[in-house]
Amino acid sequence: MLKTNKFATLAILAALTITPAFAADKPAAVVNGVAIAQDRVEMNVKGAVAQGQPDSPELRKAIREDLISREVMVQAASKSGLDKTADVVQQMEIARQTVLVNAYVQDVLKKNPVGEDQLKKAYETLKAKLGDKEYNARHILVASEAEAKDIIAKLGKKAKFEQLAKSSIDTGSAAQGGALGWTVPKNFVEPFANALLNLKKGEYTKIPVKTQFGWHVIKLDDVRSLKVPGYNELKPQLQQRLQQQTIQKAIADLRATAKIE
Image 1 (cartoon, helix red, strand yellow):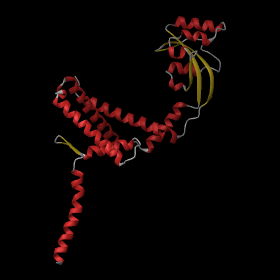
Image 2 (cartoon, one colour):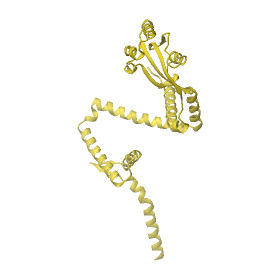
Image 3 (cartoon, one colour):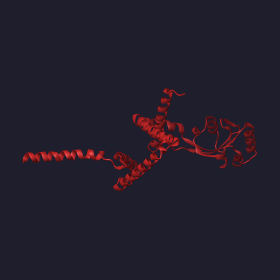
Image 4 (cartoon, one colour):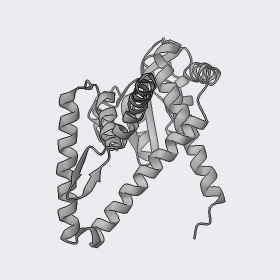
């Protein structure tokens, strides 16, 4: 009798141990003989939770119902031969590539994490690049040096910079009287930045400034001290930038060794 009870207890313990494995293997649903894996439900739940939704029975039920609806539509589309049409085949290939590209990117970032030292170095580099002042400038962009000289001559006769700026081929700033807003010189191409740094508040360039965009007449409205945001505030953006650089390097390395015809 004692032996019988002992074996019964072991059997129950074994059943308790094995049951979770069977439960994990059990599909979330079976649609016309096609199983929808529970893992697919879990993946969708994970995505929903990442977007702020609470993991709940209602959420899981909604996801299961959605997967069932998708499966019946997929089966109907396949039965109609839609999965064989050229456009659908191309879209499916693009979707496959997108999934693989995303997986590759995540793998690269996982293998090349951005360290704290890298982030702090990037922050110090950024601070040095920005400097300690920012400038509020205007400009008028024209196609030729002669046009720029003509504008400078008109300014010398007390013409309003804002009025002359309406003729600028930089349509974005032209509507704002040539205003470029507060920024740092490093955000401009070198000839423009150098000319701006040589101006005093209220002055404009007496000689046209040539860049790859055309000929500029630049006016400096104001200068103020620049307060660079703290490290912790910029850390997320710095991390994103360094991650992008890591990905770009990985792509460049792949292209360098690929046979491209």
